[in-house]
Length: 148
Image (cartoon, rainbow, N blue to C red; front, side):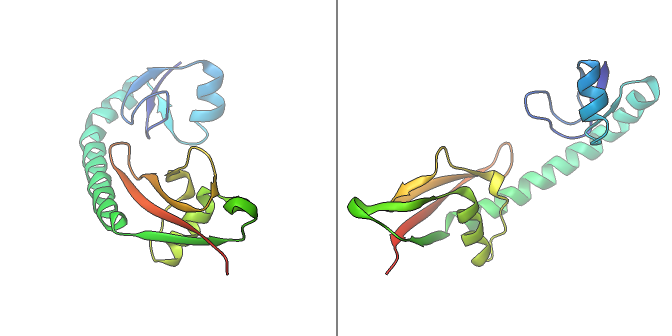
């Protein structure tokens, strides 16, 4: 099945590309979620017109992400947790905890954009990657402190 992607799909392609996928994937996943449309003559002609609109949208999203990355680079997040012996945390600090702490500081970030290879389980200061756009990343400092 040939389709035209309307949005970026990981491991498949970027918006505006014409790709070939298996029938079931296109019919049951991409088309119902409006991530793609069928690649017929009408839609391909429409794609030519939409490429300029898509490029402008991507540039706007990238510039907004770059602005947000600059404001995030100055942010330092402090999270307090109960600790046991040898400064081991009861539980862990996850991307959701970091997203909530950022929201409390006025920075609205989706938890899925916070790249944490594994949950933080010790006290200290950590550099955490935030992927705001496919080409824009920011690093924030997360300090995990003991609860008093």
